Amino acid sequence: MRVDVVSIFPDYLAALDLSLVGKARQAGLLDLRVHDLRDWTADRHRTVDDTPFGGGAGMVMRPDVWGRALDDVLPAGGGGHLVVPTPSGDVFTQRHAEALAAEEHVVIACGRYEGIDARVAERTRAAGHRVSELSIGDYVLNGGEVAALVMIEAFGRLLPGVVGNPHSLVEESHGAAGLLEYPVYTKPPEWAGLEVPEVLLSGHHARIERWRRDRALERTAARRPDMVAALDPASLDKADRAVLAGLGWEVRDGRLRPAAEPEPGSAPGRVAE
Ligand code: 97T
Picture (tube, protein in one colour):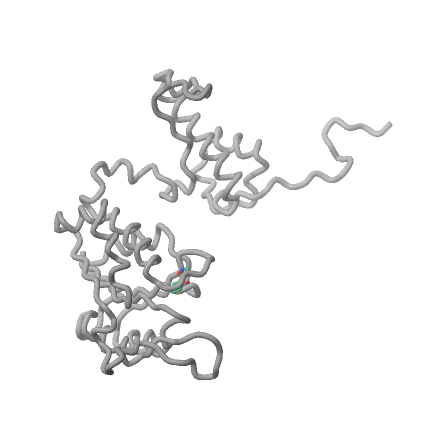
């Protein structure tokens, strides 16, 4: 896979020499090139930004500089994919990571200040490229570099051959199961007066599976009710439904919903005097 990143702080992307992504690059699985946007400036001061039309605080990145940069790094004649990290984009998820890992070439445009002149995305689309404006979450960064690092790490580890054991890609949080991961333990079996749950030492594979599934359901219900609501009821067995019922969730009209509140005084077994 080929990835081009354009930024006014190319050194910010130095972390990509390290760790898993660095190994993927050394193994020839990822051809990652980081560019300095100022290489496409035309003035003595290497200016990349200017004041916003219509007024307001901050600076906007100039379309002419970005236009020249993208003309050089996107494939000629269209068919490329430009990713623009921005707090106003769709939220980047594991589904985006999977889709990007399947691409042959992605260009990431890291904006700073208040963003990039909107005509850059417009013209890039008109030239026949896809443009994905993506946020990594509801908080504000000073620029797109950290968001680009997050996205590259997320899709880079999905490239075939990058993660040693493909099994570790199957069970993890935000995989297809739609549940958070169960808690994990290693040696020693007793530490700081705390014991590893007995079942994990039992060697009883089916019970271990069930215990992990129960903990994953509990955790997801406690931390991410939105993920419980999005579960496909067809993916739940009887034991799953019982656990979820105990956590206040039921299947109604083919969807998981918080169990209906009982009417006051309608508790089962209560009889009028
Ligand atoms: O806050 C930002 C500024 C520039 C580019 C991206 C971001 C951002 O991306 N996800 C959250 C915030």
